[in-house]
Each structure stands twice: as C-alpha cells, then as structure tokens.
Length: 304
Image 1 (cartoon, rainbow, N blue to C red):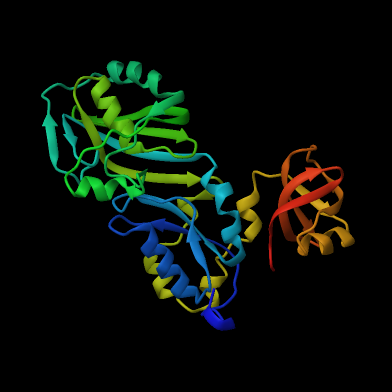
Image 2 (spheres, helix red, strand yellow):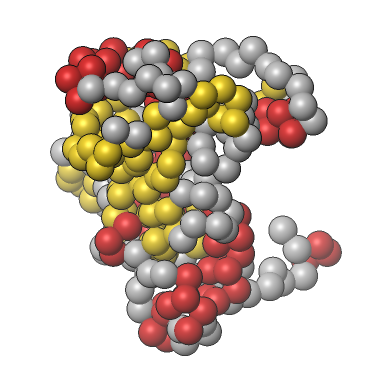
C-alpha cells in the first residue's frame, strides 16, 4: 500500500496476461516488464519458471492476483530434454559438472524406469531451488558452497512419457504433474535410476491450468505494444483463474453482502455444500469462498 493515504502508482486494471517466457530472464523480471507495459498498480505471476526455462508464465494483474493460488495448485504440462551421462550442481545445463558416466540407456530401459515416476511420488528438490531451509533459500546456501539434506516432498505425476530419442545421449519427455514439481529432479533421479546420470538440457512449460504457451505473447511483443490499448486487449478476465471452481449466481442482496465481506445468498449453481466456489452477479465475479447453507461464505472478495 502507498504510505499516508497516497495513491498507488499505476492503473487499477485487473485480469491475466499470458506470456511465452524466453530463456535467460527471471519470472520476476517478466512481471516487472508487464506491469510497466500496462502501467498497472499490481502484478504477480502464477508459478515460477527457472531463468533457463521457456514457456507459459501467466501474469495476474490487480484483483486477479487474488486468484493466483488456484493456478499454482492446478495441473501443469512440461516438455523437456534429458541429457544422459552427466550430473550437474543445478541438475540442469547451467551448473558445473559433478560426475560423468559412459553408460547410455536403451529406449526400453527408459520406458521401464519411467513407471516409478508416475502417480504419487516422493521427490527431493534440487540443491539450487527456492525451498526454504531454516529461513534461507536453498539456492543461497548452495551458492555459498554448502550441501543440504533437503526433505522429500509429495508430487502427483499424472503422466510421464518418452516422446522422442534424438540420439543416445538425449531423450525428450513430456510430463503432466501437480503443484510443486521440479522437472530437474525428475531428470536427476531418472539418470540415477538408469545408472547413467542425467540433467535437464532444456525445459518448456507448455501449459498451466487454463493458460497455454501457444497463446502467450513474447516479451518483444509486450515491449512493442507497451502502453497501448492493443496490449490491454490481450488481457483475459479475472475469472479465467477460477476455471476449476464452480460458479454460483448470486442474489442481488447476496452480492451486496459479499462485497462487504459477509456471507451472501445464492440463486443458482452446481456447487455442493462445503465446496469452494466463486460467486458472480450480472456476469462479474464478486468473491471466492465456501458454499454452505445456500450462501457463499467469502475468503477473497474482488474489488472490481
């Protein structure tokens, strides 16, 4: 918030802008570029991509930032190349070489090993990751040359498939997984399971929830269209981030009560009691909350 009641800089615009992130830039820098280009008061992204990674980065603006958790929780699709024969400090091509192997897996060997990486698995994050260790980011500790025993985390992998084998040294895989997955850990652990080591050569996030890289703008387009109505015309509505939640149609008095932070009466919708849902009035989103007793009990209210 701006101090002493001063106005926040920028315009109070809300919605989503889908970016096809190039390699070599951080997710945070993309957010800054988009916020500047749209002269927006507030912006944030829905799920970090490593600087070396490319693909979909959904940028939430204004009140849409309140829907970010629903996108970070959504399923995501990745396409990536594993390079066999080398383990690196970062589990990707950016890091230093830790160990090498002359072994190379067969296609059949890869296919057989992938089975252990599907379903609900336990995954240890890379040493160079944003996981917090005693209040510090793991990558800060790793950069100082210290090793860590990071705790394994649950990850749901819906699918993981070998889609191409360019040569003996590499394999291209596609994966669909839930929240918190590290593709670099998949490459590292697959290489270990095959006895040949491995790391991510390149990584592309094809989609995240309702957002697709193929629909995204390039950073060059964002720069070229900066501060123009044409750029703003690419904004998707706030409720795009709520696609996985049922919509409830609010009564007029229910919308008023919800905007004041109180439970509001619902006229129609597909939600069941206890479901998380979002309420709309006259086609505009009003709030997200729990549906109970014919009312929506708000957890987030949209100031549109």
